[in-house]
Length: 268
Image 1 (cartoon, rainbow, N blue to C red):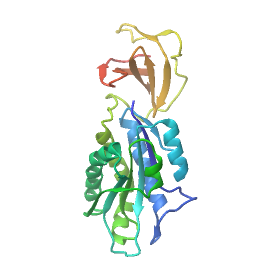
Image 2: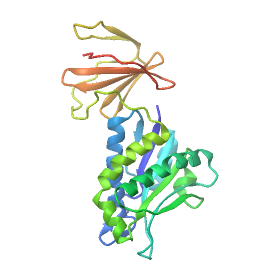
Image 3: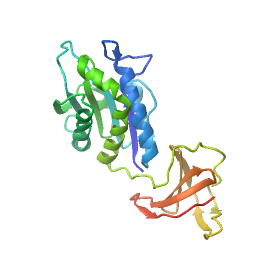
Image 4: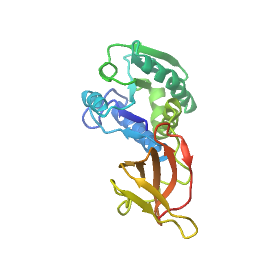
């Protein structure tokens, strides 16, 4: 399963980032990050690391966790209020980062155009001066959505920041080929009760009366993915969602390819 580190480049209340005309970079990029994280967890199968940390902690955490991709959101700034446009940066010559940039840059720029933030693409650039790009061992990218110092751009960005974040989630998913969650997932149900699958021995789930019970086999691990519970066993990933009837299995996936093997109905 793909693991992504998603970071706002500045921490609200600690590091405001660039400030102009009453707008704080930290507030705006955290709004985008929160919305992006919510949709990624809601709609896609992935492991997402998105805790709020400062630069060195972001890099250290991404490396320690062994994430597959690291993405950091920023807003640009200039002493010239007329400076404008969208751009991305990756570490110079890093093949994996260049592939990530090639797949993600145009998708994110299209979002800026969609919400009337900016029509200028300043380019997909390479750089060596950014610690976030130098320090991360995996493909990584810095996104500069627009200029906080440009009154028109930042106003449009702030107006649509949450929607921009939601669209960024789908852009990221497309860029790195995240598998979508099975149809029937809902984020409206709370996480209630204890998950009844344990590790280390074969377990059964009781089916609805009209269905046949299925044996999961030996369960090796269970993890939370957003509101979902994902169970690893016997070369498969089994996905369960919380419902008013209890835990419901919505399908199984090949553990290596993460391609869906089968879908089935309700299991309590």
